[in-house]
Image 1 (cartoon, rainbow, N blue to C red):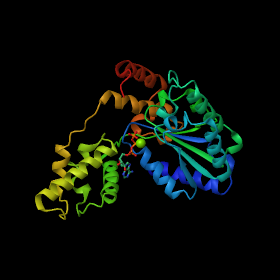
Image 2 (image 1 turned 120 degrees about the horizontal axis):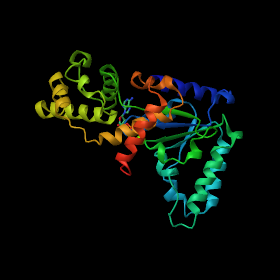
Image 3 (image 1 turned 180 degrees about the horizontal axis):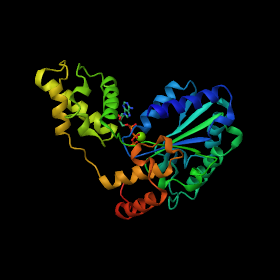
Image 4 (image 1 turned 90 degrees about the horizontal axis):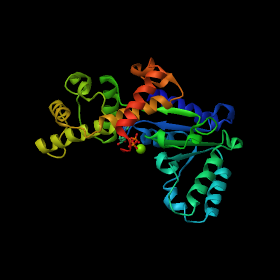
Length: 287
Ligand SMILES: Nc1ncnc2c1ncn2[C@@H]1O[C@H](COP(=O)(O)OP(=O)(O)OP(=O)(O)O)[C@@H](O)[C@H]1O
Ligand SMILES: [Mg+2]
């Protein structure tokens, strides 16, 4: 995670300083739900020192409106320059456009955005940041080099130490009162949460906080016993195969092995492909 943030800030600096050849046209964040894609994108938007624009629901919002509106928006983006354009839930935005019954406006709008994204005269001035947990549903030509040419995997935390890093950040984020050193209760706490999503870890912490409030009032500090109980109590609702599928898709898409945890650093493309095929049959159209 820290590695990813550092890479992103270097890219932002290259944009600010006009070293365009160092800047990717677009970045794709992939990984299962709750791994922090949206969180990191928002943190980057705040810290990068560039204007950021979020394109939201453009299917429902712009499709049907005149395509001229889209042109206006693209012109504004181009005029701003040095701008990061963020598109969350990219598979929904850019997924299959068949059968939408809008007379083809939808596919024209998307085609126009894709064309805009691959206009290399914008390199270094406009950076696209697209997030998805289903990169397999993204249009293939979006993923080809020259559009989203840097792909960053977001995976579930792999070690108790990583769980503790995320948990500490979440304690701060949620302004939870506690003096507990999480490393001191590693066996009963973070070791149990390995493989959980950041969203699950957040749920465990909030559960501990509720528990503390129930025991000693709303202002009470969270004690070790509350964290331990919450870690045992919490039952993540999950579809293990779908999550493994999303995780392996992220590994498959990644453009750099350096960003992969040890568990995947030595996987061969053949092994990966075989497991993905298997899972694809199992998960089919699940979401
Ligand atoms: N590094 C982190 N530090 C603190 N909080 C985090 C971190 N990463 C994620 N979170 C929190 O975990 C939760 C899930 O993260 P987020 O919504 O970014 O996941 P996501 O990858 O975008 O999931 P989805 O694919 O479902 O959109 C959020 O509440 C977020 O604030
Ligand atoms: Mg998200």
